[in-house]
Length: 83
Image 1 (cartoon, rainbow, N blue to C red):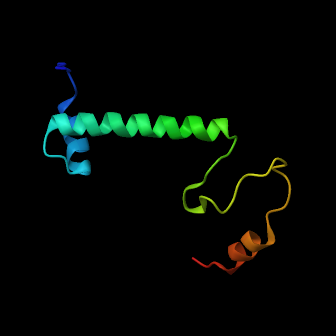
Image 2: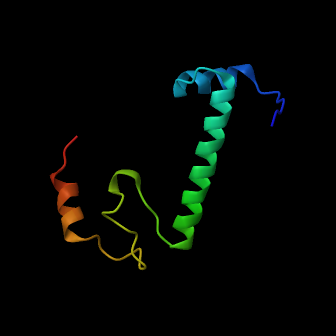
Image 3: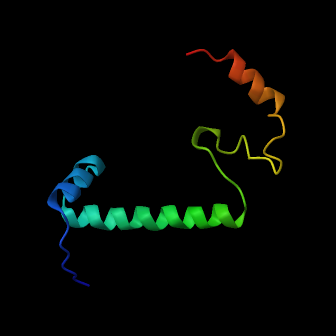
């Protein structure tokens, strides 16, 4: 299907460069795929009532009682880490 879109050249060129895409068409197609993937993941997370925090993915889930103390292992890691 062919669709003509009026997209800001600055916006599409920045996305093309960042994504290393060869054409504007590839940029738009990949942006749409990423958008769809992102929203499907968000829907699954909301459905499972889980919140995943990037680097902590799979190792920590926000407890039902958010005011409860952190697990000892996470607390220990926090105090051991230096900047």
